[in-house]
View 1: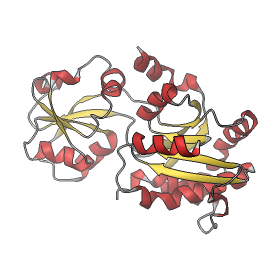
View 2: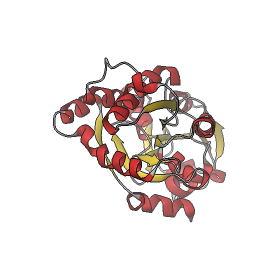
View 3: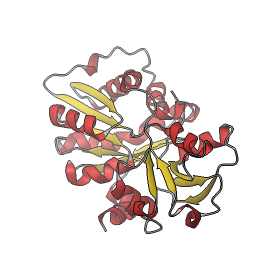
View 4: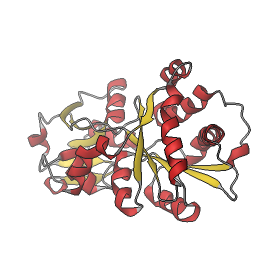
Length: 277
């Protein structure tokens, strides 16, 4: 398991001092506040991440005076959709692509951002050993584990620079598998995110380099679902920034959180406009 997938969850626990807190608030029941964490293309299982989510949600419940809370960690929208339907969560921390989809699908409202070092998904690259630029990749094979959301790729990542139809696509299922396709000459080029690019720099990659990069994109979003009462939502949003202030600042830095802070739709206006275009 790579650290960057779950560091922001561990940080949430460390900065609040609740690593030893019993999951008193984690049980379902009347008044339970559900919190969904959807980190797409994460490495590792939901079972590995769930204890971190439980502790984070327990502290959020204690801080905000919720009578009960239940957290769920997922890496795919399909599983997240099941949780949304069954548990009707009040809040979520979502990858950018999921956020853009869920605005219409689940009517989520942006209330904050979760900026995390090396979380992946804030910039995308096309890499190759032999192509010199994007033009050299067009008409060739392109490997990626990100093909599950073509609209996000073409409208937000590429922004007109390319269409998926410009390539012969090779779908992979794991982040490192994508890089290996290029390393082993099974694909001319590959579309990866910034976390995957960091792996390229850490391993023997036989001259693999980035030949095209997207614009920098906003971080993961903290959202409210329609089930969240207005007063509860307002209080939760107001408390977001406190997690990484004061004594928590050093702990956040040590475990990879840059910031958790209040935000609104205007902070994501550029990407939402591109996605809706």
